[in-house]
Image 1 (spheres, rainbow, N blue to C red):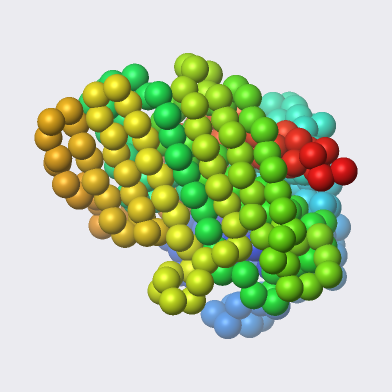
Image 2 (cartoon, rainbow, N blue to C red; image 1 turned 30 degrees about the vertical axis):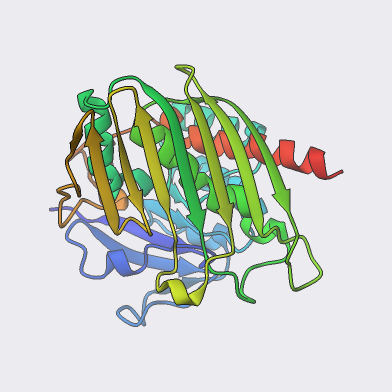
Length: 317
C-alpha cells in the first residue's frame, strides 16, 4: 500500500511526530523548525517552510508553527504549493484568515484540516452517540470546562499560542458543538490576567456564555488553574442536559454518568481504543475513508473562539 509522505513543520503544539513512528499508511519524509525524532535521525532537515515545500516527497504538512500568529499564512503557503495541511489549533486568529483557508481548500486540489479530534476521543465519542440517539430528548443546556496546569512554559506573548480562549477554549467549544451536534449561534467572552505571576499578556482564566442554534444555553470556563495535586494535566468536565436526562464526564473524563428520567444508568460503556483523528485524515487523503465532519463544521468552534476573544479584548479595553 502506498504510504503518504508527511512533513512536520514546527513543534509549538501537539505535533504528530509520535503517531508517524511505524505508521502503516504514512511515512515521515522531512522536518523543519524542529529536531528530527529519534526514530528517524537521518530524515531530511529543511531550513525553512519554503525549503520543505520544495520537497517532492512531501504530500501532507503537519503544522505546529513557531508563532501561531503566522500559522494561517503558513497553511496558505502549503496549500498554494499543492500540499495538504493538518494544522494545530488555532489554525487562524481572524475570521478573514479562516475564510481564506476554507476558500482555498474548496478550490483544491490540496485539502486542509485542523487538529480537531477532541470530541472523537473517549468518553466524548460515546457521549455524542447518546445525544444523537435521542435518549436525552431536546438538549437545553451544556456546561464545559478545560483547566490546565500553568507553569513558566506558558507564553506571555499571545502571538505564540493564540491566547487562552483560542488555545484552550477551543477544546471546550468543540465538546459543545461536536458532541451535541448543535452549532453555537451567539457567544460572548471574558478573560482576566488576575493571578498572572509575570508581567505579560497571559490570561489565566476565561468564561464564555453561549446560545446554540436550537435555542439551548451553554457556559464554558477555561483556565490555567489546575493544580499538581489533581494528578492529571487536564481537568475537563462536560455536562449535557436534555429534557429527558443528562450525561456527564468529569475529572478529566475519568468519571462518567448517564441519567435518563428516573433511572441512574451509571458509568458509560466506552471503547478501549478509537481511531485517531490524524489517521482518519490520512485515510481520507488515501481514498480509504471519509472524515466525520465537514471542514466548515470542524473549524466552526475555532470561528467562535475568534469572536469570543474579540469580545473579551473589547471588554478589557
